[in-house]
Length: 82
Image (cartoon, rainbow, N blue to C red; front, side, top):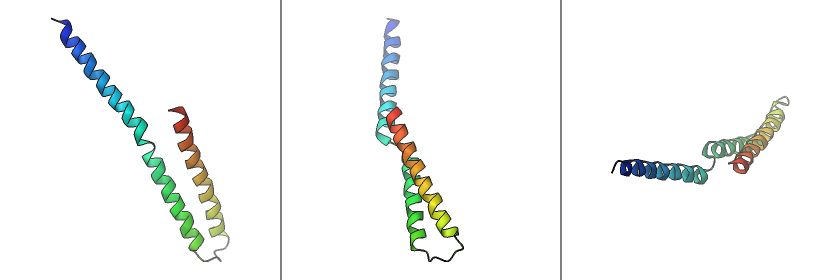
């Protein structure tokens, strides 16, 4: 009779672990996706802004494009390794 609590606890632990892993697999990268959306919105705002900012608008657009690329690569890397 002493083994029954052990097996019950083991079963509960396995169910919780399976639920955690399923949650990780289905949630994706919510923070990275939000960061990507925000970077894309910033890029659209820079596109809409008038030129004539002493090259700073153009530089910001380059940096935003680089940031978008890095976030996408991070999402792809996480998807490939998890």
